[in-house]
Image (tube, rainbow, N blue to C red; front, side):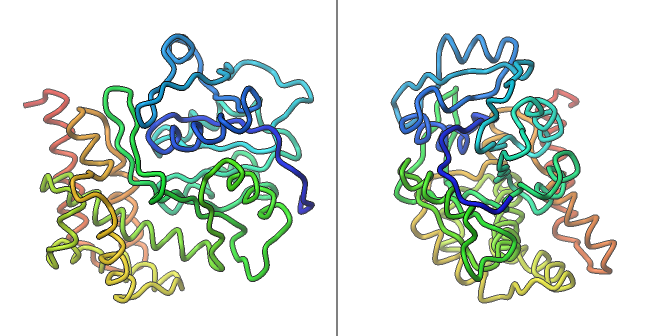
Length: 310
């Protein structure tokens, strides 16, 4: 499906920090035509309490995963859970995905699109990522909207396809800054390079984003991701490391990467998608990954500590 049409209805699953960023903007624009998918006690809590985003309480149109759309499928479905929750989220979205529903999954990692395509196919899937330095604490999400954006598009965007243009127009009407990179695969790997290093080292060392503006040592782990990306034909380089260091100067220095937030809150982390994936790919491609192995096992120990194993 390549034609352009105005996107009037959106279904979204996942109300973490980034999900709240998207839902608060889209809900203001679409009202009840934004459906937030949630079931059981979570649905009851969201209907009763809503969510607080940047100090404002929002109530959304909450739809159970079991509810059948009939022929009223949404124009766009957004899956924005944590990576370990993706398989269940895909099951919970089955009743929301029609033959013409566009799908986006701006999760962390480099395998989200592959996982979505295994269930729903590639035809209506757009590549996407979120760059939102958000904090989620005690059910309250906060972020700097001026520094937040979505990057999305086809795998390659030498010209903007009609469906990409339709999503971009929706997001911009909702006040969501939207960028369409020429090479979405490279953009996703660039973010992954940042996340693998920042999230894992922050979780183990207990450091906020401000560390990368002053410490060359904090940047060192990025090199393993670059080596793997190059083996896959993706053109990351040390210049990208320098670029990210300059970008982080605009992030509030006290903000914490999501994996550190998870550890401090006693939640399971996305370490399998970060270090676990890099270690697996490194073995497949013959790229040593000793730094990722160290951080991976360090985070597993912190998870076990949170679980009360010692």
